[in-house]
Image 1 (spheres, helix red, strand yellow):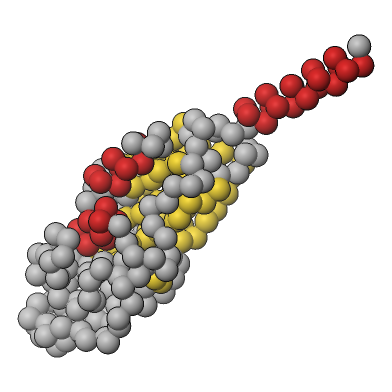
Image 2 (tube, rainbow, N blue to C red):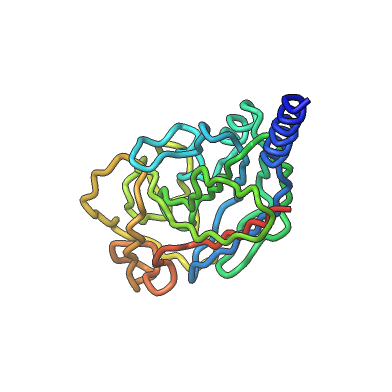
Length: 233
């Protein structure tokens, strides 16, 4: 009889443990920069062995597409292909400086970790990145501040030329309409081809020339660049 009670208790504890692995979460993301936009956000819940990127390692082709041109389709396919749960483009477009997207609901199912990425515009290959953050099992509200990373796939020449396809140098656009033109190109001498913390843009104050097409008074930033609030139900 005693053994039966013990086994029943262990079974109940096991069922309770399994039930806490799944959670409904609500996510909000705020752009903390002074004058940059985020391309369509990609929010994903996945297992602990899945990652959208690894700091210190080379970017995957899917990450490169996102970091250079804001294309999140391949990342979405990769996550959903491993039974992950995603929210692609919850802001329905660009997220401007100071703006937030709220009430992004995810039923995480058996997924235990959260990742978030989006390209920072105007840049060559900068992106905001939350990498495989363990979702708390206890109900509550949790705040995470995240940095901008450099994908390491393109030189930061700070030239706005409509580029955005992988392997095509240049910046797609300055969505705020506050970019310059005719820049000669910034040569920062960086040779880190791995994902790393982005040093920020240099810019200049000449909208019709100079080395950069970015405005140092508007587009420069200091980390962190985004605020993420996760509410576990």
